[in-house]
Amino acid sequence: MTAEELVQTQRRLGVSQRELAARLGVSPRQVAYFLSGQKPIPAAVAERVRNLGTRRENTNVSLADATDAQLIAELAGRLGRITHLTDLVRTAFPQVVAQPGPDSQALIERLAREFDLRPVIGHGSVTRPSGDADTTTARSG
Image 1 (tube, rainbow, N blue to C red):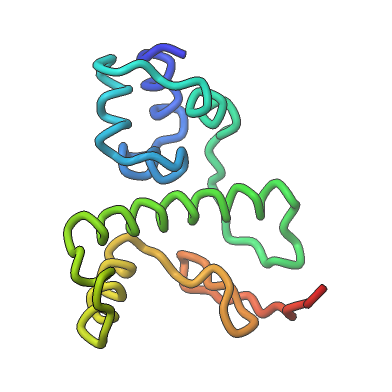
Image 2 (image 1 turned 30 degrees about the vertical axis):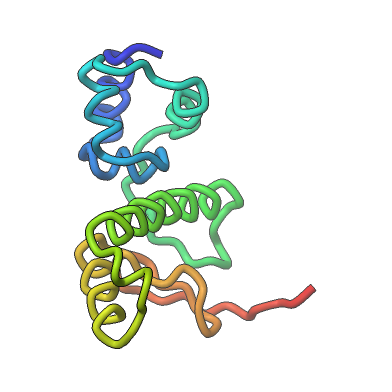
């Protein structure tokens, strides 16, 4: 995959570099390198780019009505954002990882708000970025 193909994909999806990075599970800095052609796009990342599909205008669907593909896409995007946030915290605030405490929790919550992260699974509900909550029943298997 070329840098120009990645630029075209970003335009087609209508997303920022940060959002593209989250969807691909890489850092925004890596995306900047890929987009500028400064670094080659690894095969695994190119495959993720091809699997992004097209922009979805309305992503707010209830869990009961969501297709497997919609659920996978939603979770992959959130996992990418969570991975990015975790990397930021580890790099910028190593004391949060080394000695978690009340101050660390407040910082993590602030960063989660800034990156529009909500709990993916927690206490029987999934909260979508729009703020709507879908209630689910957890199954143990």
